[in-house]
Amino acid sequence: MSAGLSINVQNLVNPRQNSFVPRVFTVTEKTRETLDIVTIKAHSGDGGVRLEVHPGQFNMLYVHGIGEIPVSISAVGSDGSLIHTVRRVGPVSNALGSLRIGESFGVRGPYGTHWPLESLHGRSVIVLAGGLGLAPLRPAIHHLLKFRDELGDVGIYCGARSPADRIFASEFARWQKAKPRATGAKSIEVRVTVDRVPDHAKAAWQGEIGVVTSLLPRALPDPDNVTALICGPEVMMRHAVQDLLQLGIAKEHIYLSLERNMKCAVGLCGHCQLSRYFVCRDGPVFSLDRVERLLTVKEL
Ligand SMILES: Cc1cc2nc3c(=O)[nH]c(=O)nc-3n(C[C@H](O)[C@H](O)[C@H](O)COP(=O)(O)OP(=O)(O)OC[C@H]3O[C@@H](n4cnc5c(N)ncnc54)[C@H](O)[C@@H]3O)c2cc1C
Ligand code: FES
Image 1 (cartoon, rainbow, N blue to C red):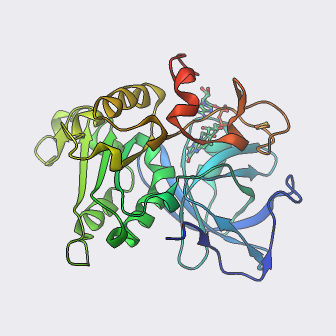
Image 2 (tube, rainbow, N blue to C red; image 1 turned 120 degrees about the horizontal axis):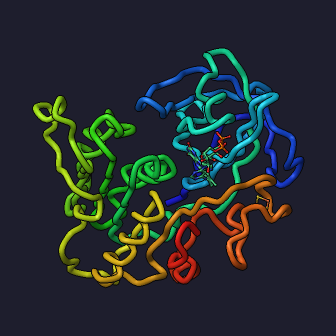
């Protein structure tokens, strides 16, 4: 079960070489996910780059004259395009969100560690996503659905603040319909919850209401055989970790993606330092046994 998502092009580029030189990518498609979140699909402008992307990794995205920020790779298109999902919070993310089709930006990467998809063969998997945390988990979900015959049960649990804050909402039904193909293959459960539903949306909302951790099963028949992948706001990840430990999942089988401010993204500048780790190089995906103590520190 190879976890790499290859982009089909001619030259193999080692991202560790020329680490600081962005490649030019051109926006080919934009999808508005919510009021402040946009998904941007882009193609390589230099026509000859082959990137090996692993689900959970991120790129540094550069907008000319504005700046550069880390953004998770939220999918890789079948045509080799790179897909990022950006919340507009400040200068660079706003500039990225404002790019029009045909306009270009710079890409360095991919960087960082990835979800441990190669070690999931035969295991059950819980995916727990809060808000934009679904972005780095989406390529992992695509991978799990593709290789579902080789897995145990898969539970995908997503939370958002309100129905209007859900991202990739149009994909949920497709994920749910991805029934196991092989006889005896296990179930796939996709559940979505929101913190609240505004009055004007109540009639239309068919889903659940409550925090995302309320979607977790009350007990697991074989917790030793379960791996959990989590991404979301820090407070959500702290609660999720407690609940998953109570369900009996071992710390080394709970993986979470952390965020820190970044500059170089290659382990040189120290901006992303978190105790003895550099999140850009040693993360962003960590197993809980490595970062459990750090999780107890508020706003890491
Ligand atoms: C590994 C990694 C992956 C990321 N993936 C994504 C992604 O897929 N999509 C996405 O939209 N963003 C992602 N981010 C966060 C993104 O990098 C920041 O939102 C961005 O740096 C903001 O830059 P800015 O210039 O737009 O705003 P700034 O002026 O730098 O920040 C504006 C506001 O956002 C806050 N902020 C900045 N960075 C973060 C952060 N990392 N987490 C929470 N709040 C922050 C600031 O404190 C400030 O209040 C990721 C960050 C990391 C480290
Ligand atoms: S961003 Fe420079 S060391 Fe991580």
